[in-house]
Length: 532
Image 1 (cartoon, helix red, strand yellow):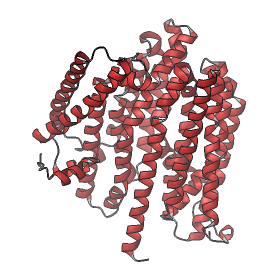
Image 2 (image 1 turned 60 degrees about the vertical axis):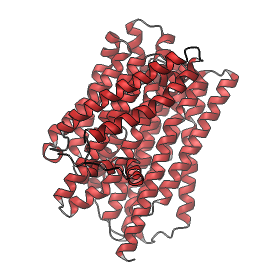
Image 3 (image 1 turned 90 degrees about the vertical axis):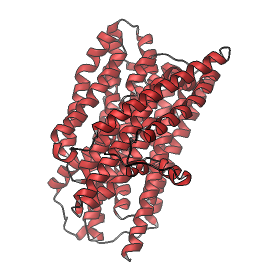
Image 4 (image 1 turned 45 degrees about the horizontal axis):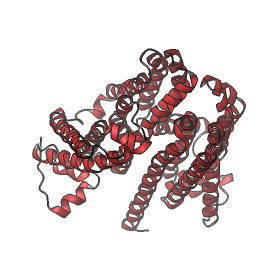
């Protein structure tokens, strides 16, 4: 195959995989809104208590491990060695996942007890079945990605999420109509994970039957020793998985400490569960806010790897700085907008406007995770993994240590503060451990201008909220929230981008790096300004 044809194939495959990942992540975030409306706060609490276990497993199967395995496959030249390597990784993952399955099955009562709710035992057992399919999904998605064949991974991702989301919404509707026990509902909802995993695996197996895998790979001598392979799986694969699952790890800490902390604060068990269910709304909003930054950070990885490989330091610095600055700006705008509209967004999406300050604080996570993900992509392109792992595990440990203490003394807002503290620790540690690689990426002059623009946006959005509420005070609260959000969001977007243009916040390169904005600028012929 000619180089130009191969390059075109790789670009098409990468675009397909990026779109599929975007769709899968969007589905994974959006379905929780109607689901929460159907099952209520207690039902949502039950589901969200166990969701981090599912989420961490699926992060391994969808992103972390396939990316790592694809890299190993690319580095292995002989097709027979590639298949042999994939089989060996699959065998290692089978052992790990079988162990995980057994722990979740037989220690489910202990896990539920540590979550301060013994009735969660069957819900934990339900989600455990998905780990039986994870080794095969991870391995063969990664293998095909390494062969530059992105379709199996892309199609199976979307199929899996569509099946899972559909199953969960059907269960939610059934629970709503029959007033089912929330724990029974949670048990059935979590069974959607293994069902979707099985269907995705069947799709992968059918695809494999149409692909002629090299034979006689068993007689080949392994290109990587077992000890070295395990070490790389733990360090490189583990780091990629940790970054993808960072918010899920923090949610897992919440599952084990928030309810008990609220009970120590003075709430009854039912009240604590209800508050936890409301607090869990914030995770849906953060996941929605992360979709663009995740897609943007993932898209620049091939360019950074190529620039680093050819030692194009100037290009590397430009791409890294541009992506970090635009991701940070967009994340700040999203977080500010959510804060300004929190009562209305909360009421519109979830039918009530409780814990607005707690949820608003939690949404600042969008900014910190955006920086964290971009930092990781920069370090990953240079094959630096240990520093990222140290930073994430340190932040996670902080969350574990302070979460219950904060909740016991401050109430539910303490959980949001503990999350922000742990993410801040991660970002600061990554900066300290990688000063050389991450130096001069953030412009403090640009941040100063952004602060002015964000303040103007906040004032404009708040003025819009007050104006519409004053004009239509008698309208149903949820309809009024829809009217406010429908008008205030375009106002906020306009003020943000107009302010950025007037104050010359972005360079031309940075304008063009912002999703969807580049096309708008080309269509409208807007002139932009260089700054520095």
